[in-house]
Image (cartoon, rainbow, N blue to C red):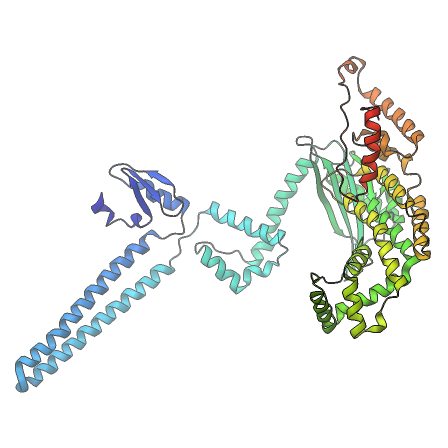
Length: 551
């Protein structure tokens, strides 16, 4: 076995661990061999490590051997020349010349042989072993996923450094061209994903739709439609964007209604729509009404509107804060000075956040960060821009506005997720927000007092009748965490519970009612310190000892 290993290049990649077994130097897998064959080793290298050229190492050894042999011959010839010259003394000069010429000829021959061997080696290395069709397709698919999920441009396959990287990682892989990606691989992957998702969504029992429209920076109008449903096999909430289209038609209620209906029919879910959630735009609401679908306003969007409208009562202070933030964001020396002051005060350097009108909760983020580094801001402004200084009353307004805005900040973040059902929290959150805002009613600081009053009025205007929404109140009752505890008005709960029992009675047969298990003790919603759920948990703690199955 030992003598054979000298002539097989495979043993450069394996280690003999025991008789008839060898371990791969790359993946450490142990392979069995027959007594007279190492075919299993060869098959392993071709299948698992196809990019490793087995013959390369052997060729290097052969080339090294030939080069060493040539060098040895050259040394011997060179040593022989002086010997001949010395033996012939002065009368043998022509012989010495002949010997020197002979030596030079041999050296040239050796150099040429070395150059030929080197050229052959280079040509051998440049021969790339092509990948199998399956492996090449797998790499194409992964490349496409990287481009799509990483939002890379298709031209990445044309970038020289990226091509070099791929070449180094896998010399046998040929990158697809930009045209191949856009005209072949991308449409193929899209159609494959489209077919798979359509098969999944058609199994859904009910589908909820969220839709939104916007205008791009190039003044192109778009409408996006997303379908949400519970997978009947896994009971997980799934979301699929079924359309994001450039919409150039007139944005009338009829046109939008027809557009939505076409999309629903295209996905075969037109008879499964339970509700359409939108931003309360008049044309969208009208389109939903024409289509005969149930409309639900976007809760997070409604919260943002009521907060923005209420912030007008403290707009003077908010504007001053914005001016300071804008200055530090624009001025590099100012930003450096602010960072320097924070370090001198042993405060972890923080950057100020800019308020963006189109982004929810951005005003809270701005004020909260602003107040965190209050001392550093005051010290910095006093040195470089005293005209931007806030008055003591402004700082009081900022301080008192933060805990009020944090209520809406927490609720918005919790209802903005799409990995869990949030409809059952709609009524509960309205109740909790009203109770939390009520705690600030005794506030005497004039701007804050007006701020609280405006918030209460806005909430009453937008959410005053929320407990009468059939879909939302049924979702609240059916959520074992809430039931009756989610309602402010017990009459609304009684009405909703009676209607729900009537519906259930028409579904469950009388013979099946005896098999209905007793309701289990409802779980509570986990809460954090200073969370909006704190009050709800306290209420649950009082009710559960009295009636463990209270509903």
